[in-house]
Image 1 (tube, one colour):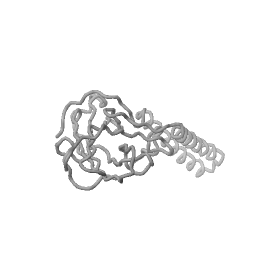
Image 2: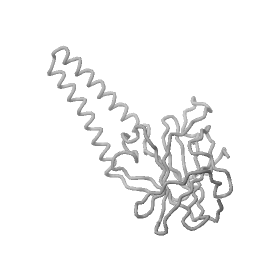
Image 3: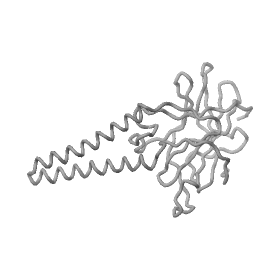
Image 4: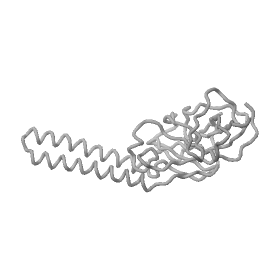
Length: 231
């Protein structure tokens, strides 16, 4: 069920400075496009030296941006959020927060994870209103200490606390939240599993500081102590 309140918790934003990262990408793309058009116009007017200069300026902007993108990625490190801490994703005009609320082991080799999605009302502009938002697509996996990834099992499941599971991606209004339950089958030798929730598709791979960008560290969720649960 959708709820209207959540307790406060520590925050981790992906990327950390989303508005600046988006502006940097859009600004660089604008400069490169203008440089291409300007160089083409100058070349058509047979002003080849000017065309070379404009083209070089556009190339320099792209190289500077790519360098900053790689530096941000190479200097980053993986991080694991403690139970109760939230991972935020920027949706341009607002932010969606996620946190793991509970885990359970209904039988050996099975791990049930309850993930809460919250539309943070403090991250929207005053003129946006109360309109609903459908979060961008996410991928979910458990990752063990050996780096092996486990996708969730298909099919509807009851939540670890007996509540119904809401599909991930269900639309919300500001301040609302819901819980999605995932079930994973783990081999006996899986140790230290952590939940990884990531954005899929889109331009995130080109955003400076985003975990989808090249060589960037990832943000994981530590799993709280499992409870007894039934399918």
